[in-house]
Amino acid sequence: MLSDVTQTTESAATPPVLPRTPRVHRAWFVAAVTFVTIIGAAAFASLPGLLIEPLHTEFDWSRGTVGFAVSVNLALYGLTAPFAAALMDRFGIRRVVAVALSVIALGSLLTVWMTAAWQLVLFWGVLVGLGSGSMALAFAATVTNRWFVARRGLVTGILTAAGASGQLVFLPLLSWLVENHGWRPASVTVALSALVIVPFVWLLLRDHPADVGLAPYGAAEFVPKPGPVQGAARRAVTVLLKAARTGPFWLLAGTFAICGASTNGLVRTHFVPAAHDHGMPITAAASLLAVIGVFDVVGTIASGWFTDRFESRRLLATYYALRGVSLLFLPMLLAPSVHPPMVFFIVFYGLDWVATVPPTLALCREHYGEDSAIVFGWVLASHQVGAAVVAFAGGLARDVFGSYDVVWYASGALCAAAALMALVIRRRPAVPEPLLTP
Image 1: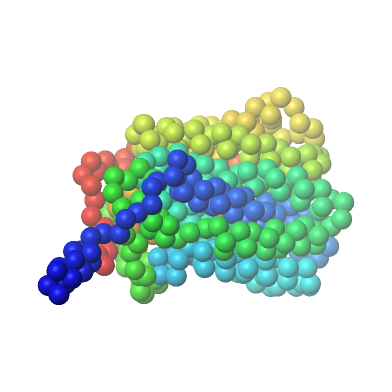
Image 2 (image 1 turned 180 degrees about the vertical axis):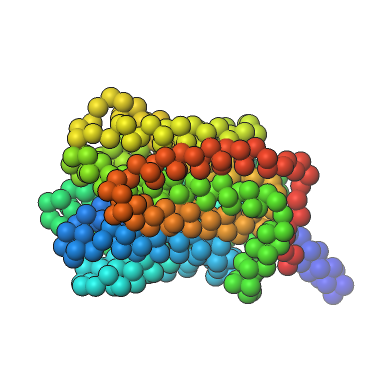
């Protein structure tokens, strides 16, 4: 009897035997599913810039009105991100992403029957904004933090580039649909692309390496899966309040706000109508944005590789400085047809499009440790608020001045300021403690 008890006690104290680590770690398959999910979800990010002229023509809504709906979408995209990261800690990645994709599909589909501007704000601005916010870069940050210890910079770059790849896949198709069949089939395409991804997310994505008995990629030992974190909204707000007491948070938020203003808010939303103002066909302008997506994949993956090897602050300063210079030249390059200097701008700008993400996320990890995904969610919120302001201001400037030129020049100056802000972010060599202890 005593022998049986001793054997039972020893058995209970012995950790479970884990399966052998496969030759290709499961983390790479999870990253692949995440990549495909973000690619499919990128369809909704490709559409707003294509809707401005068709909605202005059909409903006689001003460009400022359409820009306001886009700005609501962009703002909610950012403001939802930190809460989505906390919800993933509470309910799991699969559930949150599946629900988010369903909300995106619903909002995009309802726009087909809209007749008033407030419906555009509700369906595209609110519903698609909330859904897309849950599919934001905080999703990529959460997957990277849980599944990878080594190669985090590279994986962050790859997952960030997925959005550009989605833009590459969908933008030419959506622009062709808008020009030849109207904007409604394009909205239906966005809805269907979101719905198609839901089964893949539910069947193939896993919340944590411990779910399949593995350690994170590059980890020296097994990491148990943490229990659900209660009070997701309270945790997101508490992390924000504590991060807001630190200088690096405001510098990262400020630089990322300028990043959003100069990319999603300006180029993604207003490049197509601005090029169309100069006589360029919509399909040609949309194809140029797609080319930005091609080179963004290269630039962002390369940025992730650089982030694993070089100081993130200096990388950020370089990226913002180069972006600012390119925007100052853009008004002189817009013309009825595509010419070599414009192609050079597209390639140059594409390499820099979201190259800022890997070093920004690396700085969040450096300063905020285990809470970095939520802190990055708030930094991303500032990115989208900056994008929202310029999405609205760009349309308003076009209505008032009859040109986008002033917005290009102002964005170039803001990028110069962001480069200086990045350089003054202090270094923190010590391993940080989490902002919020469980």
